[in-house]
Length: 229
Image (cartoon, helix red, strand yellow):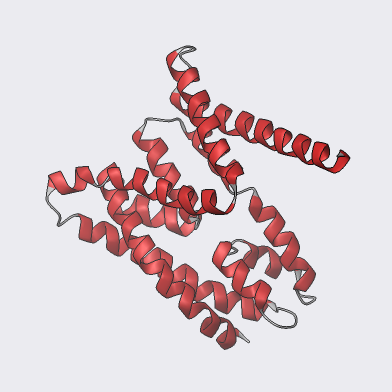
């Protein structure tokens, strides 16, 4: 079953390569060392969370705000883990806890679409190949970044914002709520920074949480109104 998991994860490993390489390059331009970059990929293993952490680090955000922001960003992992647990075979709890660390959007999708149940051995194989690709290519990206001219390294920080726009556009195409959430949180973040002088890290956290709650409340109210009609 471990071998089956590895086979299933090859496509994920290939897909992770360019994203992890880019992360390593950006981490280098942000000022992280090779050890810091590699450890972040080893310990966090979450693409979007690592990218936004780089952005927050470049803004001088404190560690507590970074941890809280990435926790909010990755809270969906609770739902993914709970969903996969319904499909999982009866394995030791420590095994489930171990492979739960490696559940990402991609590994979850592959495991969820697999016919029948999933075993710990299968999940270990799936996660091993994916995790290895992410960590190794993050380190390679950082090493390659060291050979780039300094002005190119500095300009790479712009790629962070381009990546966030790239993540937002597909979501907006499928669901208008994502657009309103982005606009609302952006305006609130500006208001907190410019008018209330809230620290950058806390401004991001507060605007994200409040905007998500408000937009979801509005959406639910609209649904209730439509059902009533």
